[in-house]
Length: 353
Image 1 (cartoon, rainbow, N blue to C red):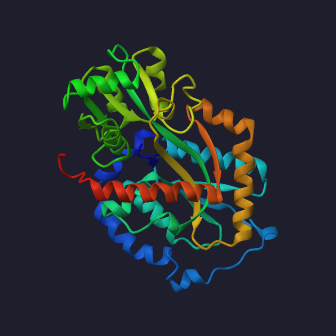
Image 2 (tube, helix red, strand yellow):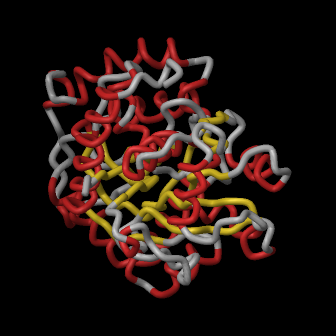
């Protein structure tokens, strides 16, 4: 059995599609080349970090850059986390700014280039692990210090509500009996859910048609319910209303454990296939922040994500929260980085396969 780790952001699936197609990509790419030097520690100015004692932090409001549009999954998750961090530490006050230019690259660049004194934080998403292999930026997870990862949404196999298959095995059999005819929607060639589809094909030895919908989740949902396509791999939370109404059905999720937003749906692992595909978003700081400052932030995040009130907030938004902080968040990013490195080396997502 081939073990494949992919993760996804949230964005929820809504924001993933814009990454590859953004018209500001050239500008973002050029900007990132300069940023990477500072992010990896070679910039002299950033190396002269002002050390802040734990008891002295914070002394003022903290700016947070979210590289996605307001109201999306990443924005909702990060704002929710910050709200509950503030409730657990009255001294923590956050001001959030959204900058989705360059498919999110510009906002991540701003965070990486910010002074590493703890007063500028940012969000990064699973696309950060893809960008280097798409030739968009040299930034990686190593350019940041992780604080917390409040979401790591799994890919789910979602099909038409009246489709003739009700299990993964039945869907696979149908795909094998109808090679290159089952149409599976995604948010763009080489985007996370498109990659999830390729991994599904490899694991089950079948072939489907990849249909891009750069407009994202809403367009994909409309296409499935309108019977223009047969299925999609995507964050199930973006399709909850249609699933609950019976217009769509979820056959399985690509995760080690079942998702709380659809607790009755089995994982691929339960069916004997270790496929893990997740769209994550994390709160990070520029590399090199004082350890005492990071401790203040990580402790507040850990308390927030472990509280029942915070968990309820996320579930009410249709988001299954996670509670990874510090090194645990770093491991997820590192694992996915290595996975994407392999996937992009094996596939040409700019060509028909």
